[in-house]
Image (cartoon, rainbow, N blue to C red; front, side):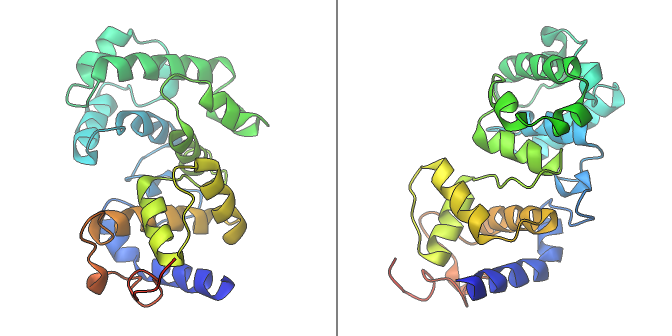
Length: 231
């Protein structure tokens, strides 16, 4: 299995240009630009909430409005009324709910001293999960891309792509998928970010739910599904 994982990582490294074309900017391991070109960890957190059930193109438009108003910082959002923020984030789905969640999350992070203080906490993941609107995938995304803590987010694309490629199936058990992948992968910030960016890209472009484009997929040479092998 280690040979297969090594090959996967090698393939993902070779996808750099394709990843950047789809919004994942391969950069220094600690750069926030990985996350759709975010200019700061604050923007990663903000867009991680806004992008839920909303297209990235819409979120980018909203982010530009937030930047223009100086509302792309956690500390600034902590002092904004949710109803005012909802007007700024027009276009995202469930904007009133997300505006309320964002201001509450911003206040919670500000109260403990900001993102740098959050990163140093031993209960960082649990604290994030206690916030309204922050599920496991969002918490792990914030940890990995905003706080630079190696923590693999498990998306629907992760389950589909890795399930087919390696012939494993943990169903909807988030913890089982996370434990499996974090045992399998080298605990390396760059590898974790590259892995997530690549599986999401492959899941969207090639590893489709009903009609996967196996013949075009970068993983076709190592994927059990593409080679017709059973789980």
